[in-house]
Amino acid sequence: MSHRLIKRPDGLWAVWSTIVDDFVLDGVTLDDYVADARERAADDAEKEIRRVAAELEAGRRPYHQFTESYAEACETRDELLAAYDDEDDDECAQNRNRDGNETTKGERPRP
Image 1: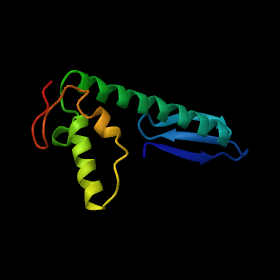
Image 2 (image 1 turned 90 degrees about the vertical axis):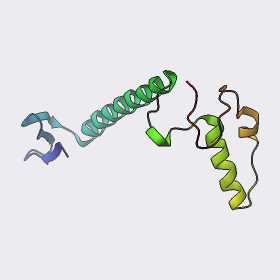
Image 3 (image 1 turned 180 degrees about the vertical axis):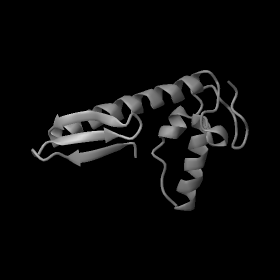
């Protein structure tokens, strides 16, 4: 982990970065550090979600061999539901081919 939480003698907190070899936060409360970490994590999550969505929109496969169309994911779900003798909520049935992708399991989706 590149950040290390360190308690200061005055009871406040500092965060040392092994990347920049310096404090990235100093003299903060624990709540301040949590808020900062939460904001950074949210920013990172948003960047990753948008990156993956852009890849999918461009017809690329961000999950490589694990990238599935909605129809393929529904087929997987149907197989699992059948294996456990569970009922489908019909969401997949209603939306299965709305993405315009008529592929079957194992085929590469058309961009």
